[in-house]
Image (tube, rainbow, N blue to C red; front, side):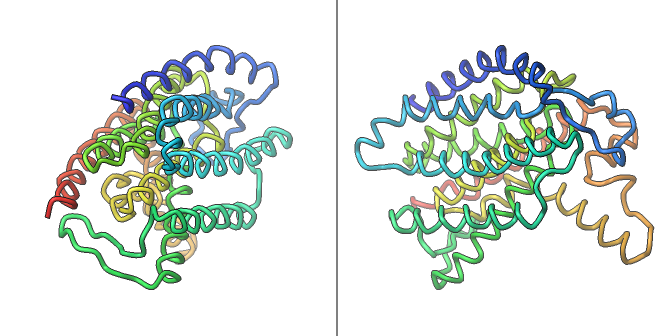
Length: 328
């Protein structure tokens, strides 16, 4: 019940904050700069307010503090740890967005600085979760219900790069109106349901809040978008998704539930690699995959609904693969 109430509160907070944030961002001239190498019809989006991810960030903070207080009073800070992780990634995105706005172009922090900051945040989170006994170096494998014990340092290196990869994959998926939010919404619902199923209520509070906050944001972000989440929002979402997976001690579940994030990232990697290998040839019309489909005649709404539908299907499949973890 508290998960549901957290989601309802987060939805309300996100939707209300949006009513005031969007005009404020316009007044600050915090508009998105569109890459010239992108689809030419995206140039009409130039100047749309960005950093709208602040909406669901505020919503998650409010919901976790209101409905997670009982768990924290009892010594379970897992929801707070995941929230802080997501906020730190959101802060990195905010710095990146702010730099882009100041420069009036679509480049912010350098790739090197982003990577180092993201890696440092991941390592700190993993060490804290391990210290608080919320994380083990036993790698749980969904569908076969077995765990592989790894040396802690090996697990730490693996986990840190999974987290950084996940955060950037979500960021890459944020390329169409409502896309990243619509794909992340069922992922958040999945983690909320799984938390309840596994009796991990504290983590479920954050997952429920995330779902509600993202839904409130989509009121303004679904096509045609009145605001973009920016790197502020997409890095927060990436941190939230991977943080939930590790808080539930099941990072490999990110493979099925994050299938769209993975496919989007792989399409970009394949495109760049093939382009360099063949000195100019391309596999896709444009990468990542959502742009390839756009240039093939798919509307933004069709792509978003298709990707969200695929995510829902894989979340259902993932639940079947992990539901018996603690009953055997």
